[in-house]
Image (tube, rainbow, N blue to C red; front, side, top):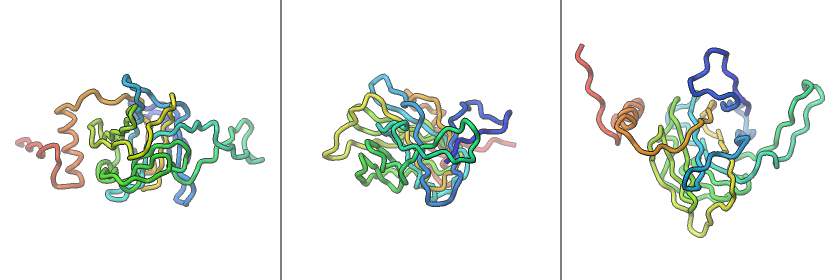
Length: 229
């Protein structure tokens, strides 16, 4: 994994330096990344993280992507020694596990209809591949104080995942965002945002068009009528 730096002048309107993650290898090495600082807290005391898929996703083959939170600070991960031939001033990298759910105190949704709560797998109905498999789709996760997770796709809430039976809600005052690109997604951007306050007609209409790119119908309505020539 590495940070992607766009060609000057080609940045998107919401581009922030240091926020685009690039999958630079197809090997079985870890494709896990943590945010450098804690994610945003909501007014209710929950936590929020959102990413945008930029490129390299294929319909039906992106279900490996996972997104969530961890109380593990990236600064506590073991350092990887800097090679002797590295440029002067090169910062050491950190060693991350093969999968995001292997991080201590982690809460991750994705993979293949799974919620990993502190490393324990729980089956869920939500499939991130079917909800957001295309470039430019945005995925956001809200973790409520009671441990409930809400998944948003393109700013529309698409499902609620209850706290697993017997589990306890995170007690940490700060959580970091964690992204796992084990699927086909190869370029994602961390979005500077808060959870949407409400779902609008414009959002639903936009989602209909997105849904029809890969299916013949959308749960949010019919295709807009074609304008007369």
